[in-house]
Length: 422
Picture 1 (cartoon, rainbow, N blue to C red):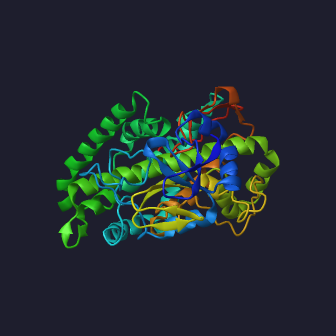
Picture 2: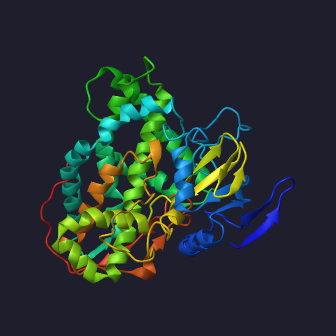
Picture 3: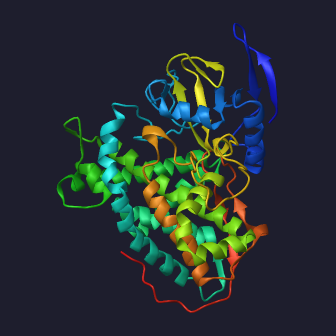
């Protein structure tokens, strides 16, 4: 993915990069490529997927994310010629509500969701996550073998998310399977569209529940969405479904990806692992640093609504823009020695949760679930050893930088007798 200079008719010379965030090269070398972009072309053009700007430095990413009037998250699913194609490149066939809405349309959706993602809600959800962690570890502890992704990293956030939404816990694999496969594969994968179709079928199952949920009592997020009103009218069933699917996707992928990357890093840095186990108060800053170094979501897109200059480059209305959280988190102008993992780094203005009004609404839950997941593994399996040769990363890290599997071994132990919470 080289960088060169080329001239467009009627414009100054602009930097161009051979950049495809779904490619195997980016998956294997995203840090090196991010550093190269930061050093040589923090705002540059790629010709992939119809062409888009790649914004890499922290200042430019912040400018784009905080200016919703100039950089739209919107998506026009009815008119393919409309340049507004949402928050991912290439666009996902399923509109992502409310992430693909702009103010003021966005605001009432955020208000409906906020109570379920407050600090209080996150604290209340933690006992469930901790009990689920022990129940999952009980299933494998006597064998001395675990897949940190398949046996633990995938199911725990999925179960906690299903609990939050109010869907049957036994259905977690039904929802998680196709969503993980979509996140792990590039859009060119032969099964990509098939998995999207399965997600659509899951949406149909949720839609069938909405009429009942509008009248029956319930305290889960899906019940709240079904009863919510937007501008005085019941939230459209389609929006209830797409919002619920978006929450499921966010809960499934991001914490799992962060957990897996962190477990690999701690395997190589046992002294830091011991520090974190000995002093839980270190986790507050350590969690933010792991988020900076291992951003679960590599970046999101916007559409330019009016001519604007970003990082010295002229963007035009209708241009598509990719904000690279992965690169912005490595900007040496903001993070001294960005390659160094500093568990006490503060301040830590990483972009992994996004910025502005679209900042990740699930951040309070992630900050609680993630350290609990890591701590419990090491408390119960202190000598765990990851099989790196058998560890398999996602084929594409275009959106989610995660893993398919991560086998490990440890000294067997007796189950605690923890029941799966309900």
